[in-house]
Length: 463
Ligand code: CO
Image (cartoon, rainbow, N blue to C red; front, side):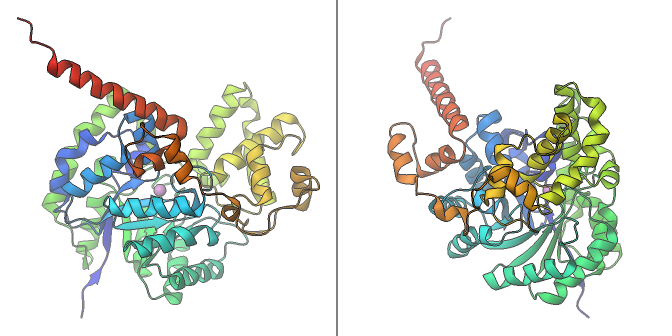
């Protein structure tokens, strides 16, 4: 009999460090471990996309494209994986198809092998352009379902979407539980339902936040899941993923083949431990983030969103309204047609719920993002939007019929011309299109750094 297999995606370079230390790991801190990681036997290393791109430019003064090329060079035998928000790419709004295609092409050209593509609303039209471009560029596409619980998010609906993605030509289906709220039973049922519908491998992504993730993975594995996302143990737990070594150890004993080298996994963890300790000491890593927090189960609101609500209310000196806002949040989500609470929907729903409570009248103030959502600028809502809310948001204006990206004009050539003398590559132009102010600041810092280097190299040494 063929040995049962479960493969691992290591997330320390992306989601684990994004979840625990807000993606603040600079390339220079982990460069030395890459040749070792290259020998671990991971299915893939998730190392780019998500918040990495934005944080590189905004806080780390790093060119994200250079980081990707360096990763490629130092992980020659490992599949490099990125997370992409469909038509939003790595930004927070929809981009024209031209930009989506170019961005995906350049990602592959600079070293990406696997692109995990998702849409916050599971509107498959928002995955099409990126998926087709990635397939054309020769990448492996992981079609991704944003997991959430609601009356319209049934097993049947998810399985049907998985089948539709398989028909789009994706190589794997990923179920993405960004909030760590999927229970073991739900995982078993959902993975079984998807497995019955598609022939391609299925991947599960979750977070330890509520403490269920190890159990959830185990039940998903019983249902036949092929790949799981884990993080090296010192960067695991809490808002991050379950530990790589722990699951490898347990699964091997149960007769699963993981392809992982235990000795290498230990070296990887030994390398990251002092880095983790340093972040705790500096205060960037709050040990609370590594603990279990079951509030998300009680309130049905993801952990990250809860902390945002707290800071919003504190800023407005209205912490006494916390309980009320928590009760209002699921109601707003229902009114908006049960969007999964992931970026940017989690922010939109949270802010609207806060507005509703603080104004003392529901939908008296509607944010411009919620108006855009009602207009259809983010895609189709999972269930119809409450008609009263629609009326309050749009008045007599009609929502758009087709796909919002079809209304967007190409911008690349125009932007490239504007950046003449500043942008040094098409990649630079793409960075600017995604994050204009941040990238402008980065360009200036880059130039200043180079001038300094020149100055110090030509300056005579004083004795
Ligand atoms: Co995640």
